[in-house]
Amino acid sequence: MRRPDDEPTASPSRARKEADQCGNLAISRRPVRAAPVRKRTNAALWRQADKAAQWSNQTVRLFVAIELDEAIKKMLARAQRSLSQFDRAVRWVAAPQMHLTLKFLGEVPDDRVADIHAALDLAVADCEPFEVATTAAGCFPPGGRVRTVWVGLGDASGMLARCQSKVEDALAAAGFPPEDRAFSAHLTLGRVKNDDSRGKLRESVTGLKTAAVSQQVETIRLTQSELSSKGPTYTVLGEHRLGG
Image (cartoon, rainbow, N blue to C red; front, side, top):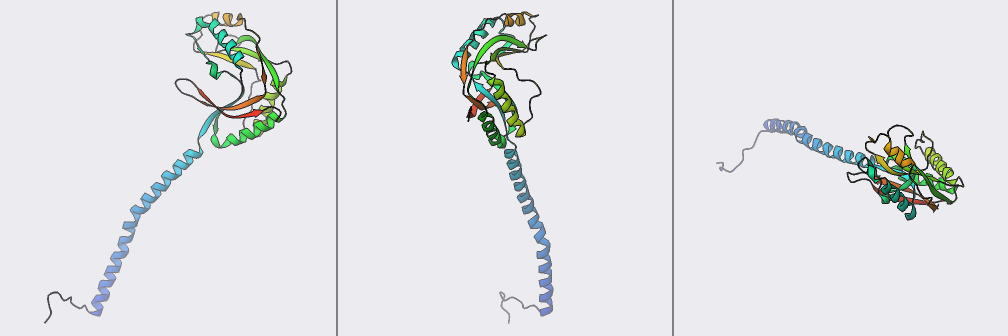
């Protein structure tokens, strides 16, 4: 007599057949279960790779410049006030943003910043401290509608031009394209939005009386520029002393 809870005993041939069927079922299920896991894993890896690529492709907007003394900045601000009748046409440069640009690098991969510092170290090693002084005001371009209002900067020793040339050469050797225009030492007062003054802006700028204000230059700076609707924000990334 077999009790209700007793399991029947299968014959050996039937047991093998059931085992084969179970084995086939197990094999057929494995790829179905594993495929979604592989897809999710790959998607996660792809997202991680994308983030890594984006991080490695981050850029910073850079330029190399000489910082100006407060005495020169105050003189430039007075010149801007003398041209206040053109306030609607000109976007004046704020005093904290005034500087002499030696080299504009533009957007640069952030992993090249160390290379730029190394190049600037080489450049300043061949330069000595020098004195500069403001000169006359002028406009770019030389004729036609004005796009930029500036005040010139000069030095009697010629060291300013030498320093700029050394910076240009060192950065070119590091893989940064040289400028295709000759260096013109100037301090930007403002950028013109729309010159419809029929020559009055240019006439006022060229007739502007600017005082000769001098300063000593002992360092150059690598600066980052972050643009926004409120204007650029500058962050000094490093300072390099002339003469090493």
